[in-house]
Image (cartoon, rainbow, N blue to C red; front, side, top):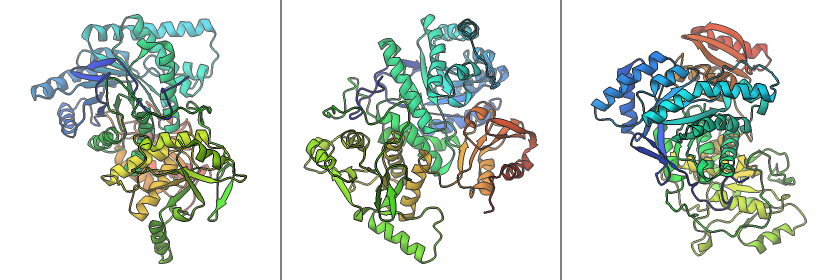
Length: 598
């Protein structure tokens, strides 16, 4: 199976066009940027105002939650008011649990998003073995629930997103495929087959997860499966990382997941999900599209030509495994094997941080590690097979990186760092550790701090999620402290090195039962010193229990101003007044032996 034509050069995945109102997604169209309202769907004025604000900053599709039939019916008034003000942006109704709400919403909007995990199922975490006959009966039940929406959507000429979430797979899927990328793909394909049986094709897929590794693997597997199913399964894809969080961490995690796929030509519309006001999502999404995504040439030709190596792929695109390099000791650290990935900085930045530390400044967990200029480093052009072969003949492990692009080396032009490091990992003997660099053109600096953060996150994070790399060299960020912090935070977001509290925080929407931004701030203030503890902060139960499967503790809205607390995916305390909930969370962490005093 292949998720893209080549791991070493990029071309945009060809898809059919899906029309959402007057907006085309996929095909020859540019990658579309979208977001979601955070206000109550019954507040027409607020929904209209937020939509206009999003459009003003460049949002091309606006999603609105419709948790009940009543909410869905109010989409009529929201749509009418927007159109009366001359706003033609397509609206997308977000549906969970309520097929009846989807049928109502389909009367008023240009697109409906449904979640296969809860459209016709409720999640109870039941463990059950299904016979083939029982499983077929379940599929027939789903068909009966889903067909009315498919037929109405086809009649009304509206589009649909079949949006699987890792956190809300049905018990039926979980029992057959497990909590896995395969389960996410199969869940979506079940609904797609029903749509296709009605000759309805105006849909896009999504495979969202809060863990970038899971998200990347699921999208790759979906593309590979669609390719196997045939050329008429060329549906566009919506990309996103759920519950990415806020601030720098949320931007890094989103960049890793979305950027990795965009770099391989996968993705036709994106949403960056931040625990912030929605307008802040759009600049990040637009920057990713402008800096990372491939252009929309109709011929989908590769951006550069690379001689494909004869060696097997250096990593499994569908299942994470770290490349197994031999241990190499340098500058007081061990690289390769099972050692932690380390952060390297240029000499001037490294020395500045050491002086700051010597002067008594508190650097906390962000400590300077490797000095790039004095590493025993071999820089090599991965397309120079003889140069790589010479390193492979060495008797001892060597630290290797990709050589910087040179003005007089035209064969380099167009080869991104991601593809260059993949080619190096393919041709290099696996015993040699690899130093990853976020840029192969050190003289060409990003235009802004956001660009630096996103490009570094995409390059380094994508390769780490491929299992490649034993240390990272941050060059895009010129400020010493910011560069060091960025390196550490990329390692944490990619799941390669945990050095601080890890938060899974969903973006706000109309389903949210408390103020997510304020609450996330209070929880971080109380728990940010708990190194290695993972806390999920969820506004409602749509993805809560599922996305908290690998979290230690969960803080979930159960009712207005009432909080349920979880240990893992099990709710242990219910209906706690919001004013008491952060302290009760602290007590729960103490109770389970995970608390230390700051």
